[in-house]
Image 1: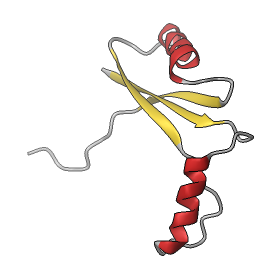
Image 2: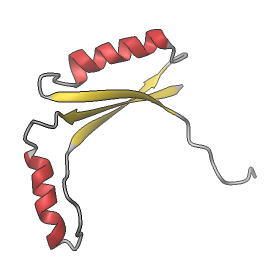
Image 3: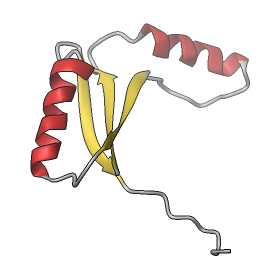
Length: 90
């Protein structure tokens, strides 16, 4: 199975109160030098079969109509490569 990731973020011109709250808290927690924080959503979809152009079109449609509010949010769709284990086989 392949994994397709849909990342949804507020558009840059939309106020992000959750991101602002995190940004304000960082210096109190000892994390300096962070200029901005934007909070978003990540959806991981396990897809049966090949992830070809038709499958990506359907996932794009899914994201546009169900996962993101395209009036205030942008989204990206990408295929995530499987992690390669660095351990030697036993």
